[in-house]
Image (cartoon, rainbow, N blue to C red; front, side):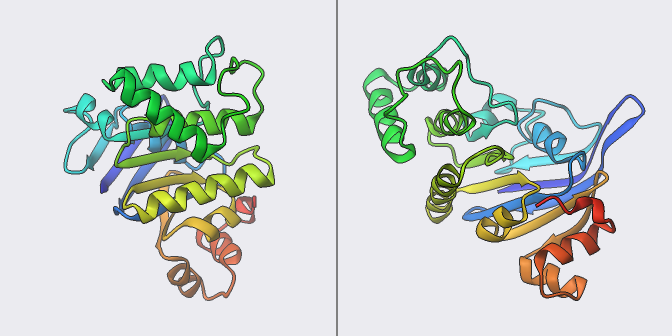
Length: 244
């Protein structure tokens, strides 16, 4: 479980995150929904301790990532916006490198990579250098790398950005299986279809603050509309957010 309270983060005069509080439960997919520049990526970077918050608190399974970042990272799987693959390494080597960092033994790591290759359909390119990979291939390798140590919590920053239809379907199927297994998943996105297909709870962020928080039905009821997309636009108070 993730609990954040009144997170704030500024970069010079720019207040990227002004007041973000939400709870992400185990066995659920929590969507961070908002227009570009709303503060979603900055919030995720604070969750996985890449950025320290200026104010507010974070607890991941009761642990403060600012006090014990290493312990938190062992329970986290992260797919960042830039994917973070090493271009000169093969897909297998990228995954294995992170597995070794997490202390997985050789035999167990080989089996884990084989399992992930099956689940994410990596076989056609598992031994190719990641330089020149398509966006879909990069996302699948980044997801395998994030899952190699079997983390309890998964943080995803716009994972379907640039994916084709088949890759998007495969990603969604994987996330639904992880949810069913009891994982806590936080998904940052601005794609309405992705939210509708995956998210148990939706946190709408606009201009660095939480504009609304609830299930899809609760948000539609709050906005007084039958369409989630219309509810989103009303709750952030701008047509500018209509990006799906």
